[in-house]
Length: 350
Length: 218
Image 1 (tube, helix red, strand yellow):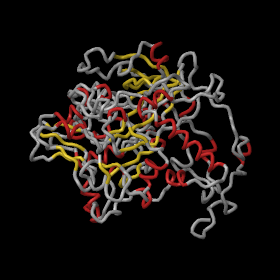
Image 2 (cartoon, rainbow over the protein chains, first blue to last red):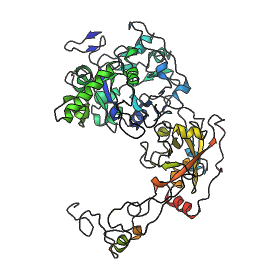
Image 3 (cartoon, rainbow over the protein chains, first blue to last red):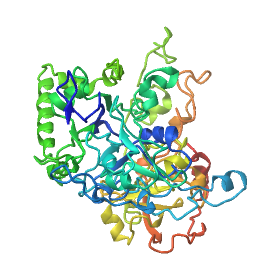
Image 4 (cartoon, helix red, strand yellow):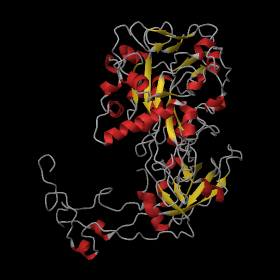
């Protein structure tokens, strides 16, 4: 770990700046617009059909690929030895079903529209199920992309140094010329966000829409990744972790309300989450009870012990606003101004 | 006022009060609560039926999009509370029949712990061609006409009130419908074995045909 010249933020060694994203889970409605934006841009064809560089899964739930949290990868407690990880099989990802539109629309078939193959699992199969019993059942949506980690176990796993963190902004990329498709990175990533392309015989992954942040977005402008920009409730902040005047630095390092998913994997993700709130439990008769709907244990399991202080801070600041006081934190979290949410043109060299 | 024009009502403003003879006679000159008609007996059709708008389409647009269907089950689903499903021997992924006295639709069961016990939620706007019988979520929902929906007022121009489908006219009574659900085919059985679409379709009579005509792609 080293620090850049004028910053107090920890960045990976040899990295000038680090892109980062904060996703507010309280705003996610599970509409999958981010998933479709990503898919349409990057993974529609050519062996990528099954891939979701961005996916949204229901939590609690087994997610995408199925039971990815049970598949190992990441680092041991010392943070120096990699933990062995599994390679998901095709069924764990779910198949990109084709449908019989052609037969119905053009050939007069009176069959119903159905997948052309047996469909018994998919990337969002357990949507909306969650856990608990009515009326105190609970679930929330978790959008996931590559975390562009500060201490990426996928990079360490590659014997050819084909997967690397790029110097200017810490985006993790697979050099398609160097990659031989060994899939050590797929095994090594505990979030299962590197994917093997059986047609190109190389591994591929989320590229943080780097052409967009480099100014090759629509209209030749700098744009945030399309998963962020296309989000109907605009739940993401995008910028640099080491931009100390930016909202990400404030949410992550100053207020400490944006926390990492599974910090115990020790890859130090640069995607952070504002943890979800839910209404309190209710009695059979419909009265409000003094009991949290989403068990705190479960949130700790996902986001580590820091989630407690994050929730406390948000509650405290929310109360300030209720009393009519000012809260910079609540202003950052409730902004509807994209210029405040997306800060990508702050460093001359990035 | 809209674009500096008064509203096309008697008062030139938004107004609730309608002094038409029929409204006065039916005691509806102001918005009035009336008890819902009993369409299906609870003893016969135990589950309350609703068809909420979903977040995966805008009406039926994109309802059959392959990209969106891959993020769902690939076919229409009905959400059932786990206890209601267990009582009927239904498991997640099974093919089930949702029916009442009007019609019967064949869909996939999805277990939904957040569903209120005693309800069946069948999200709105699946296309007819996504059902084996080419019916849809609305086939179970009648549309009743009320005399007040036939009023044209004033009689010559209808400027204040006139029949306009989807604005002033009959609509489905979505919240008053009851259904029952039964297992057609277990997901554990060979899922490649296509079910024939003939099973137990209930003849809807005139009302069924009306809902067939009006209840299509919304």
